[in-house]
Image (tube, rainbow, N blue to C red):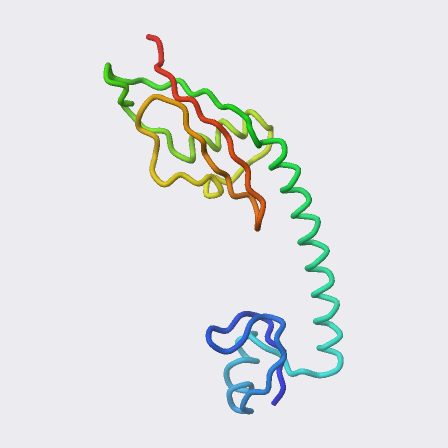
Length: 150
């Protein structure tokens, strides 16, 4: 039976693929679970429309994230943190703290998971922090951690 995959199926096909599979596999597993649909003329036309809509949406989202990346690239964030005499922070600067500061600075919500920190910042100084906003769209900000004056 010829089917159109609606979702990715590991080691079988990706969403949008049209493949020939065994009748029992299609009728008993793929179609009832919503993973595939029979490849009729109408379904093929529907998939083409869905692909076009998805491509347009992807282009719009890519353009939006590119604007955000341009706005963020080179920004400087200054954080005041409590620290000891040696420059060690009493706490740490995590991607959540940076995301909150970016939200205040840019007036846009940026997901903390897009901020790439291998480990939290635990000392005073300047750090270049990359932000992965979208596929092939990255920005780099400078985070300056200063001692809080008490």
